[in-house]
Length: 113
Length: 115
Image 1 (cartoon, helix red, strand yellow):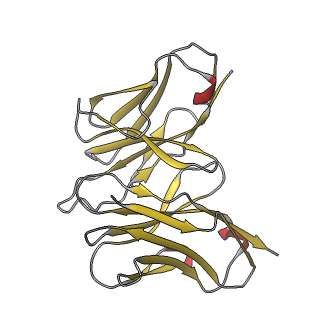
Image 2: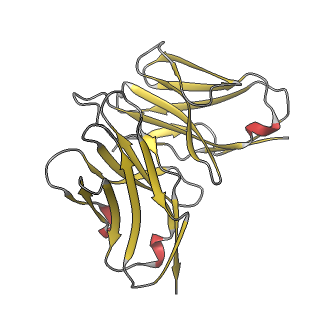
């Protein structure tokens, strides 16, 4: 069975610092991977996705993620945090066997001035 | 852009009431989903539908039912609302696609309080 682990329910970084949000998955087949962002009192918005091809994926708002098969990871990064990045971030995975996504528990990103 | 619209942003109902949450998408997506989101528990799938009049139970279907009479509309029904159903409810839709690797697109959510 697939699963997704996001390390750290809360991550705090200073404005201008590197953002690193961790996501590890378990899947018996090559996965499809997604990062979503949720701002307070809103729905989820797709940040980026990996389906096939290049393992470094660029998304919106300056975020990117790298698919590392050997480490079963899909960590989300941004070189310089901005106050507007404060939100909750969710990693999700699909193995393509059905239409469902398996979700991580989410990581709240806190930006310190 | 895909637009998923949930009928209410905030809703307050009483215990025992029958509650309807409506969701409409405008991109001709085959698949639609209902989740609930609670602090510390992430997203939990209640029901999903991959075609009109088709439905599948998710992880937590108890106390809920769904209806999909038209492709664009997916309704979540709380048969007899209880206080433990107070939550944020999120609707999503997705294309089927060849490889079933399509992202889900979300509405803004309905924050439901049962008193």
